[in-house]
Length: 362
Image (cartoon, rainbow, N blue to C red; front, side, top):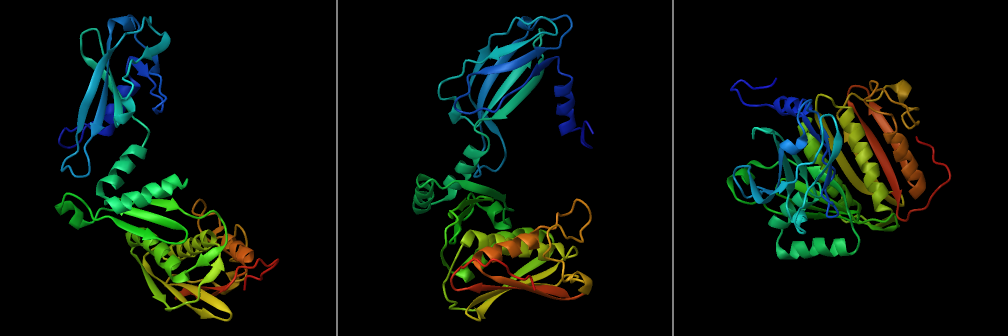
């Protein structure tokens, strides 16, 4: 496990070097307020650390338009070796430039008295935030960047970063095509192999276009489903009435139902999400081609902690939470199933959200 079939060094090679390094360095999280003070321990038995040499480097990593991964050293310097006797602990003091935070990462190298490198520690500066911003900013046009900056100015925070696969077409050109998906609850900026999702909801009741919400959630879940050989289809009735509800809760409700359907199809299958007009409101259905629900379990599926999954595979709260969401906004949920042929969950939503004290699950 130390080297691969072609004698290339694998991760365990570096792990072993760090574990048995005679100099132990603990790099903290590095932000703009980093003071350059790093804990160090001398694990030599006969060597004072002042006989060793330390060097820091500020580096930038290659960007998405580069064909190969690499890093560039933009600034470097020496560290005054601390007077630490064998087995003593102390600190390394790095005198970094005031604008060090513009770099992507910090490298810290230690060399023994003979000039041989002991180890090189590394730590990203400001975590992944800078890399994410660079990836998105690099491929968004001016109008899209203004939209992103406007959301941030309003206090909108990134609430999730969803890795997505780079399409085969992206490998043949310098930049991917940026895409924006916007709904009542979130805005997703897709570019260069990542998607940054901003939450736009504060839990208030507002106008909701159900078809738009369904399409946005289906788009975000479709990629993970494809990894499990599951297709997500939409059958949306046009010109549905706008409903007054809590979009954040509806989005969570739909995610729970999609996740539940995916769990019912370990070997793959299909999920169909339908919308249509209902009695005094609108309806949303999530139908799967999974193994179905046994008749003896139909009356328990909305109970908290009820699950037929193996231990550690789920807490049995998804459908119970969905039922609770509908109690809050005044909807109802029903389930039908044919064991071995799949299940269908039907959600009835009023035109205007109105909490109800009790709602039977079926």
